[in-house]
Amino acid sequence: MDLKKNLIPDRVKNIHLTAICGTGMAALAGLLKDMGFEVTGSDQKTYPPMSDFLFNKGIKVEDGFNENNIFSAHDLIVVGNAVKMDNPEINKINKLGLNFCSMPQAVNRFVADDKKTILVTGTHGKTTISSVIAWMLYVAGLDPSFIIGGILRNFNSNYRLGKGEFVVIEGDEYDTAYFDKGPKFLHYDPHMAVITSVEFDHADIFKDIDQVKKAFDIFISGISQKSTLVAFDSDKNIDRLISGRKCCVIKYGKNTGSAWGLGKIFYAPPWTFFEVLKQGKTFKTFKTGIFGEHNLLNTLAAVAVADNLMIPNEVIAKALESFQGVKRRQEIRGQKRGITVMDDFAHHPTAVKETVKAVKLFYQNKRLIAVFEPRTNTSMRNIFQNIYPLSFDYADIICIREPPLLNKIPVYEHFSSEKLVNDLQNRGKDAHYFPNTESIIKYLENTAKPGDLVLVMSNGGFDNIHERLLKSL
Image 1: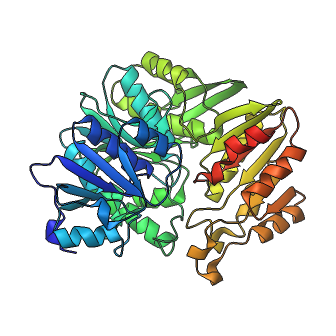
Image 2: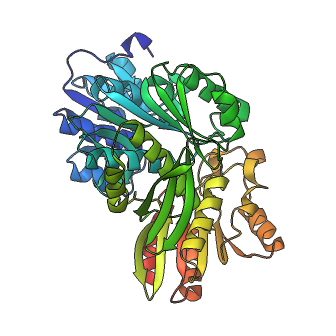
Image 3: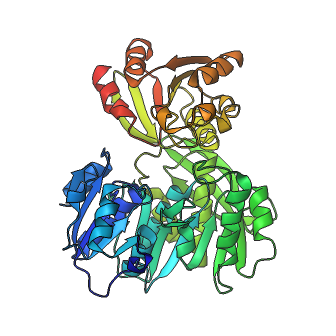
């Protein structure tokens, strides 16, 4: 590939996005469409909610990668990070000598160029924090733009093109593209940044935790002295990374010495009431539909950002009470025969643990059935084989599916769902192994009872298990 063509020309009209159905790429496609560009796309597999989202935007999406999807009339090809060098569309781009770029390059050019960027980074919580910040800015009348890795229910969108000075971007540490192996977040120059956590993930990209820390080290080193970094206070990796930095650092979390902390918390479903402390003193008690300690800490980070931007706490309170959440984040998909089906994106063992705990503590009177699909490039590997058994302590019944894409992983690295179930049973848990989605649905048909909550966790579509289960109950 000719890297001299890795640029965005001055005049652009027709844009094609290869691997358009990723959350970030779909958001970019919607933004470009709204800006008046002619937008098309292609992807290997399409599934809701992104497939529905793109269809409703009037964006034509070809199913599968094919040279015939690329034309000389395309002024620019945006290449998603899931695309490999041997992709047939890449071959066609090379043959035609077309200009191409990565998603972050396109975001910088078309969205963030003249705005103040609020960048949210970290292993966990990025989507929730980004979404809450975006909604706070909107309620404050600041007309923000945003591009986020989940669909905000308040906007029914994962992007927005506003006229205000701020843009909220979810900053991913995953690699940018096959021709740019650096993390996506290195492309942005934040006015404010958030870092939530630094743990090992993305085993297909990073060899070990040291490589992950190196990526974040490069990112933090590049933050301007005039910028502000809001950092979680109970992560040892973050503590080391932020030490001695030139930018202003504001800490939030669990430590009494931090600028921002949580005070008293009271659950009254569907509401959570929680006290926020600023410099150890009560800032305000808020009411929100968000629940779980991890999510309240995420919300705390958003409050810290909003206060730094001089948003009054009364406006913050209005935003938190009216925030409707993010699709695929503790999202109730439906109820049938008194059985509630909830969807969540959790896949990393820390996220699974915190999500299961949060749901159980919030819905204390319900029997919690946790259904988990190990589907990511990390969770299908045996890296966390001995960690996952600790993630389901608050579940009453546990259903573990066989990883659906093990053929993509070297045999010696395979994660074993059967071993996980055996380990859970040895811990006294009511755990069950399933070879496929159909067998899980059949089991739940016979096992789930009125009053139960079925928590489905996967970063993918999980064979549309939510709708299929609701129909079969």
